[in-house]
Image (cartoon, one colour):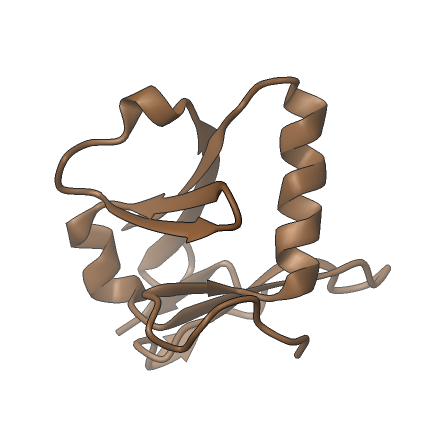
Length: 118
């Protein structure tokens, strides 16, 4: 696991590697966007992680907002119940690469690591 860019008090933590990759993806979008992280029902373990760029104007008053040097990561309160303490990492490995979620609230995860159960 790579070094985190923030204190352990944040609800959603990101490694340096994940933050750099997200910033590169955002740059490719050509807009000032934030990252929304959440959960939805589905996936092989019951709940799936969601991540997508979003216009900062769409941040709702009840969203939790975490600032990473001017880049915002947001999550709705319902998702945060399942995500609080999540570590988002990124690997560029040829097999098993991509974003990786380490969720202290998950009692089990699927083989691909993109869904979980509590």
